[in-house]
Amino acid sequence: MKARKVILQSGIEIDYLNFDNTRLHESDLYRGICGENRYLNAIPVPLGLHLALCAELARSHGYSIAEVAACAAHDLHEVYFRDLPTGLKDLCPDYARIEKLGEASVFRRLSLDTVDKSKIKHIDSLALIVEATYFQHTALSVMIDEGHPVPTEQDFRAFLRVWNDRNDQRWDTIAMAIRAHTTEGIAWDSSVVID
Image 1: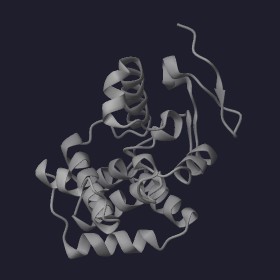
Image 2 (image 1 turned 90 degrees about the vertical axis):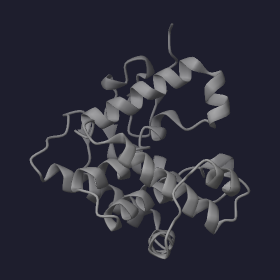
Image 3 (image 1 turned 180 degrees about the horizontal axis):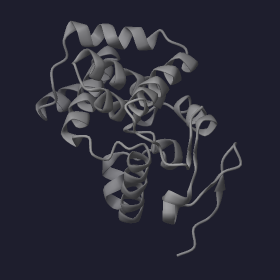
Image 4 (image 1 turned 180 degrees about the vertical axis):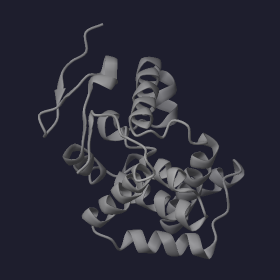
């Protein structure tokens, strides 16, 4: 299968069939987190707001530095792959498989592949509930029925802090969480450029 070339603003070419060959560059990541809203534009939550909220929630819930970094980075692969709704993703097995490989590649290259995925999922679910509640999204009742965690007042305060930030401040929240992880003696893969 021959993949079509996608060249990013930085000039980096995305290799979807071997994502480990694609450099992760801060300028592409920044542009990507500021882009389109999640949830098929049903609520005004761009990727950067969601990831910054996840970092803030993880920090306020006492997560370790590595766990905060993982929560801040858990959807960074979407900058390169975008996101498909779960129902559509189920109909596109090649996309789902390649996206999983890309997600694993980002985590491996940021030295976050050993972080407990259930802790990331907990914070991600909590962030989804906070976002859906704030914007009164109709899927909220389904999320609660599925057993998502119940947010506290502290969780909503974290959302409001991030909501009032500009995109560059949100990126700083995300990048600082990832950088803090590297100060523990963890080295990033040389294909990652975050200055």
